[in-house]
Length: 299
Image (cartoon, rainbow, N blue to C red; front, side):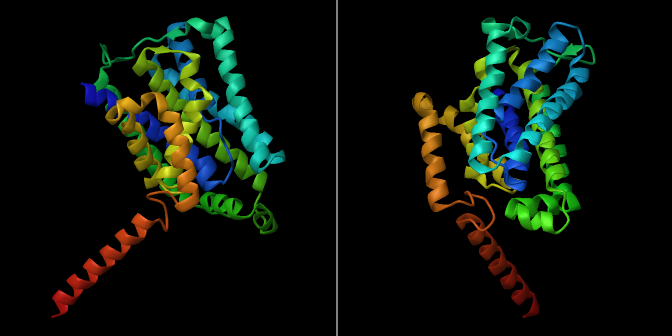
């Protein structure tokens, strides 16, 4: 049971890392307040199910839409801001949203909110059910990102990430694609928040604090920004680390910050990113093995 609970938590962070990677990895936008949208999805689903009696299966897509709509607002802000200014603005958004959760009685204020477990075929969903659900959502998200990368939308985001001025000169509507990237990334974070709220059965404003945003960003950067495998493996590594090294729990954010600095200095592609040390050696080893097998067949 313990391993399943840890797996569900890691799965939620995998989804968050994948969602942030759409904004930061593919669109190249400096977003440092992603936990705010994680919280928006969580509180949207919690309020709908606990206060108004809606089913979790209805609140899940609503959390997706509400987080995405708020994300459009952040996308509109990104049109006028770049780099450091955008990063600082997203940090501010995170603090404002958390303060709203903490001081507004509608969101439970400082007491937090109790959340009901969803029903599935007349039974309360158990931990294994959450693991199956989050796994399905991750698979769908990965498939969507894979198809996105091979579409015109993915090519447009790639060009914007490399150089907005050049992308604009080629006829790409930079503003539209940046807003779409923010909307998609924040909407997926909203789904992760909804699953998290019902899995934990209690949420509090500090669950979505700025430190959580840094943790999500660390997973993306350390794993390998701009790839699908990177955020997944980064979330697994950093998600499992607190369980394996509990004696470091109080210093987790210091470790995350230190890892970010080291990665940006010595391995900016991430551990499993494109052109990283591990990826290059893996590809080279694969080619050597493949050539050897072909040579054996010819002989």
